[in-house]
Length: 238
Image 1 (cartoon, one colour):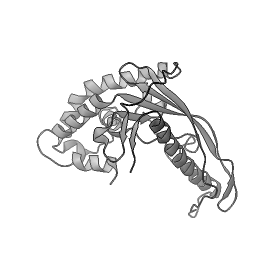
Image 2 (cartoon, rainbow, N blue to C red; image 1 turned 180 degrees about the horizontal axis):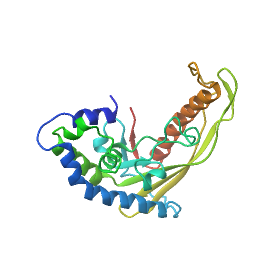
Image 3 (cartoon, rainbow, N blue to C red; image 1 turned 180 degrees about the vertical axis):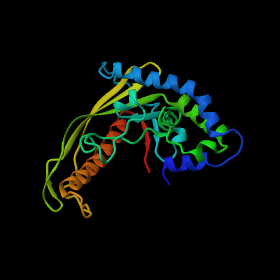
Image 4 (cartoon, rainbow, N blue to C red; image 1 turned 45 degrees about the horizontal axis):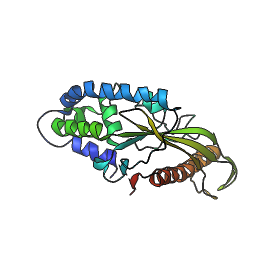
C-alpha cells in the first residue's frame, strides 16, 4: 500500500472531529507554510554552505521520522503542481514524487483539496490534525530538484532508441533559515534497452518516450539519494 493510500485509509477511519473541521483549523498554519515555501524561490541561486546534512532524514517506508520534503521548483509556489502523463512537460521534467506527509497536508488545506465528500465527512479529524502538525514541525529541510536540461528520446526500432538523458540540479535548503546547505548535480540516464507496451490507438513514439522517461527517473532518483547520503543524510528506501 502506498503512503497516500495508507493516509487515505486513515482518514476514513475513526470517530470524533470531522476531517473537514480539522482542515479548517489547519488552514492558518499551512497558509504560513505555503508562504515560507514560496519564499525559498528567492534563495535557490544563493551560494551553498556545503554543510553536512546530518539532520536530514528520509525514510520512505516510515515518513513519521522524516525531516525533509523533496519537491520540484514549481511546487514551491504551488504545492498542487504536478506532472501528469498527458502534459507536454511530462517527458521533459522529473517529478521526485517525494513530498510526503507535508505535501499531502498542503494539498488538503489548499484551494484544490483532492478529498472526496466521504473523506471530508469522516470523523478522523483529531488524527489528521495531529499528523499534519507533526509533519510541519518536523520538516527541517526542503530539497528542490530542478530539471536543468533533458533530451527526449527518439524511437528507432522496437525497444531501441537514441537520446534520452537529463541533468538535474539538487538544492538543499534549511527551511527555517532559508539558507542553502548543499547543492549538487545529477545526470540521469535510461537503461540501454527499454520494454514497453502499446495499446491500439497509442503512438509508439509517445509510449517509448514515456518508458524512457520512467527509466531515466529511476536512475536519477537513485543518484539523488546517493548524493544526499554522501553528504551525511540518513536515507532509508523500500
